[in-house]
Length: 245
Image 1 (cartoon, rainbow, N blue to C red):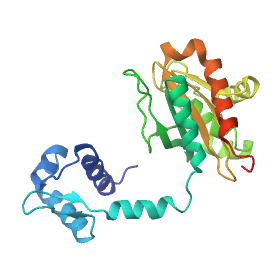
Image 2 (image 1 turned 30 degrees about the horizontal axis):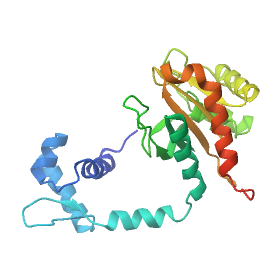
Image 3 (image 1 turned 60 degrees about the vertical axis):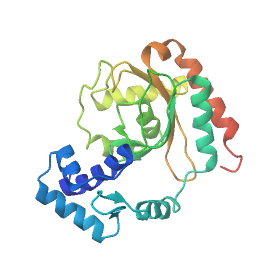
Image 4 (image 1 turned 90 degrees about the vertical axis):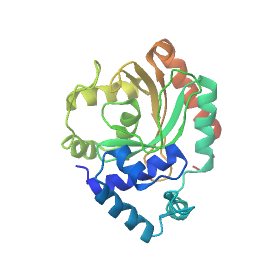
């Protein structure tokens, strides 16, 4: 369930992140198809709370640095170790594909750090992107870190859908894929969730945090070398992870 008012605030922030310039009430109302009155109320509220301002008179609204200050305060509480970003940066450069680190969020996995491939045809992923925990290599690398009882609790909340030709659509199918992942030493996905997308992932526990790390890209580039991609993934994690972790 999405709370529309909360989603509207986030959509406004995403709009400014894309456009990188001030916007008037009319610009935002027309872009989103919102009524002028509700758009005015939302912009006024954000302005009064200190999150929007008018850089020049009648030139439109723009976010204040308060967003950044709040984000920094939040991220400082539980940051990722610096070495984790170095891993995905090196992985992306070595494999030519997108690399990311994910964390669990209920029945979903959410990307908390991403380095995209430079290739014209690539896996487009952003921080905050959410994918089904059971229907992706990234998510299944998280599930491997749960006890059977914890996985059962998650399975009861999942709506098993046929996202792609290889999607596991039952608890038994997910568990079978987890066992296969243990045997091969990594999780893999071939159009399980997104058609024509393939990837490899492994668990990346840090302290008591359950994380996973993945490399993904077009299936035509990855399918024949999935084993090599997974081996590179493991090698780079071992290379960067401090002995104390």
